[in-house]
Image (spheres, helix red, strand yellow):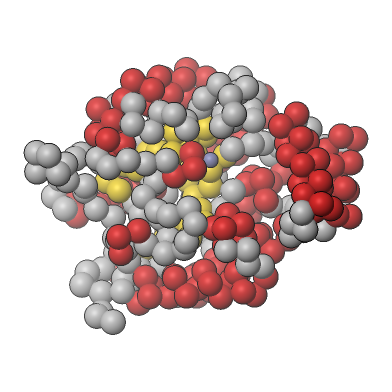
Length: 306
Ligand SMILES: [Zn+2]
């Protein structure tokens, strides 16, 4: 492994980008409850992994004593603040009732309180791009406007829902919509850097050879990949994540993690949170430069002289 060829800010040897896609925030919510009912059915009939008892308790909780929407965000912010880390949260914009839409609306008072918590902690709110908008500049513009109007947030960064992406259309559409960086580039079903990309980069349009004015922050590890796609749990999930992270650290790259807020404080999914906590503890000991996606992208622009 070659030593790093440059230093990150504060003379750090690697970068750290922590992020969270906000697909849902409400405990007592129709799609969420239907999802849990379906999960219990699959546990019984198809042998899906999980615990029937804990799933039933979760369902009862959602119906009778739903947890507060802000709670999981407080937990995330507390875990990260222990190490002085700050992260980026992406708010999904699409029709509420659509199959792949958000399970909340931008008018939700809970969402507004969550956004306030995030910004007060010095973290970033970006856009989680809608399922069908991944190559549509007008759709991106509409979403940026919606977040500005509803939340008073001027977004500069994006990650698409389900990592929806096509090359180069996604980046061209984001550029046309005035976005500054994209955190979508990664795989859903396997951990590790897509195309071996461990550093931020400016994509190039293959048709024209032009540099696209978007900083791509490539993803390395996502919770759903470990626990769903690979079916890992506990120590094995942690080991698989570290296997990907360690070479990126050694090469002086950008370690990018994506953990969903709705798997925090969930007894049935205890190891999703546990692996995140373990990874942060290990990474903190190695002293990364941890910043929001927006800060990393702007630093990369300066470094590249662009
Ligand atoms: Zn999503």
